[in-house]
Image (cartoon, rainbow, N blue to C red; front, side, top):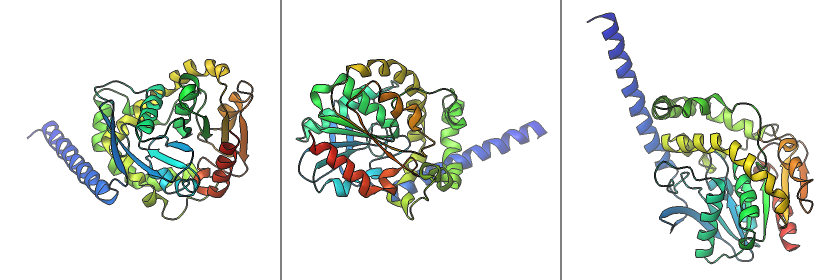
Length: 313
């Protein structure tokens, strides 16, 4: 056997080993973090959701690389004391179906689908809350579906576009052939090693709460299909926001912006601050010494602000 043939054989064995590792890892993650809610099918897409409480409707939408347990492990139990709260896995995340075919579900389509699901569950005209990436879903609903909601809450939410590249994994993950290969061989093995450190960046300057990775089922994001969905959502969002944000002056509904002053992932100056001069009725709550996850680190304050905001309308 030549050196080249030997190299190919070793490489093939390595790739097979990584594929097997990923397959076993995906099985293990789903075994450890099974669905915690119920399912509803809307427009041919089955969505995983948790619904609790009675009162005014409130729809919670999670951000990138996440799932609805982002909320069941933080603000949902308290909000359910005063609201009818529905948290959804976004299409392609957690245990919700991905959009059919190879198309991209932009935030307008996500908002439309989740509002249809909420109505089917008996919740009409909810307030829509979006964390991080899903700030785009809130703003899309405010612009495109004002007759279907009461208002919006941006929780460390994306509201504008940005300059510069994303994390290197998004660049690799978006490439033909290499992207899927990376997703199915490297994301789970490497991600398992750096998961805690990466999630800590979300909380900085706060410390990640003990047990957070398990309570929020964070490892579900390491599944290959979820990673690929997140790559597409992140890489398409910037252009979408450039088209959506010029229409913010059409928004007349109430808007609450809750943001950590020390958020380095979705900085307030590039998102919330841009909205305030255009949507003059927006109320801003800036939390000092707080990062990108105030719903975990300042749960009581976030719940208080949401409840007080909703009672005004």
